[in-house]
Image 1 (cartoon, rainbow, N blue to C red):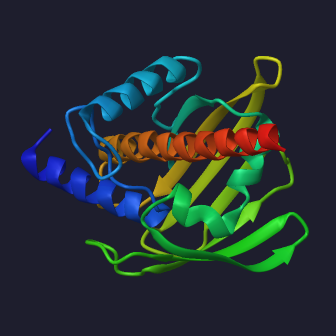
Image 2 (cartoon, rainbow, N blue to C red; image 1 turned 45 degrees about the horizontal axis):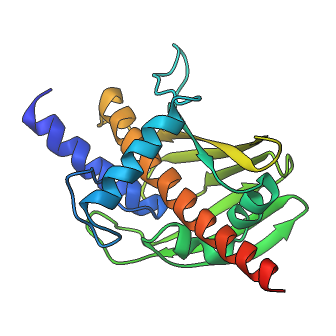
Length: 221
């Protein structure tokens, strides 16, 4: 891969991460705001272990327009608890740190329309974006589609499956994106991997923290 393509991929990954509200990918050797090297290493090891359940990164079959990738992780909380956090749209800035605000602007049956505002960052030309969320298959699937923003088309789905007698939840996150004709498909898929990896780790950490807090309060009461 040429240096120009690598730079393009890095910029695309950052823009995609900003659009979806999650920070750009970091690795075990990094020291970010959310923890030290040991914490990052533990997170990465957990990701590798759990993603062996169902993680797939794949190109589209011929004829499919959007580039698609999927990954999975296990969250140590019941499915209903995980679902409730994923559809608590006002709390999305906690799940996805690059979001400044998120609010519900309209509801039509199982369709929830939200407006989110991105924090100031590079490559973002349109900080305000709107998303349609489909809750028809609750609590097993949350589908969403970006209606405007910094890309031609972005769609996603969170699929939940109860495991371990209801104690834990397997979460699969699938994304499809069309950034336009200028970025090669391999770079798109590479960027999707990076963004998904961070998104599922953010959700896992936040939901498990909330579940531990809720469980502790329940014991006290």
